[in-house]
Image (tube, rainbow, N blue to C red; front, top):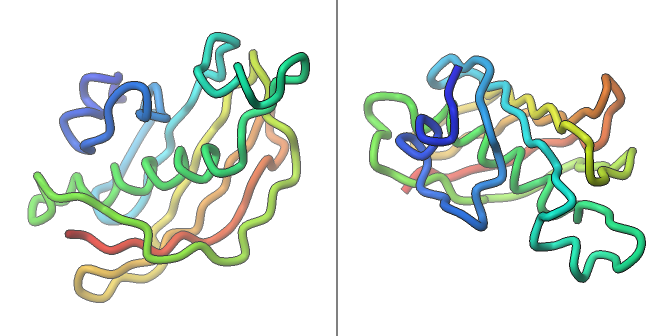
Length: 140
């Protein structure tokens, strides 16, 4: 288990753009399970949407990417590097994420060739899929 400080030792994102609060488990180079506690005080709820706060899909996607980055950047040869988006494929949003939700983020690395890889990503709330797709990354 990693708290925010442990996460920040692996990935470079910082407040207000660190989108995961804790890591339940990870296997370097293979997988990661993380969580985001969606708080009503989140900066993006001021404008998305007033009176009807919904976590933007792009930020759910970013939370998934950061979860995958923990798996990839925790590998010894990738320490101190960054993982950038190379592509987003087959990503579907199935459920709104709102204040009070706990977003479970799971990424399994399904392909890797050199610095490029693909992660199968699933975000759920209470066991229901909020988003699912594939994220391509490049380690730089």
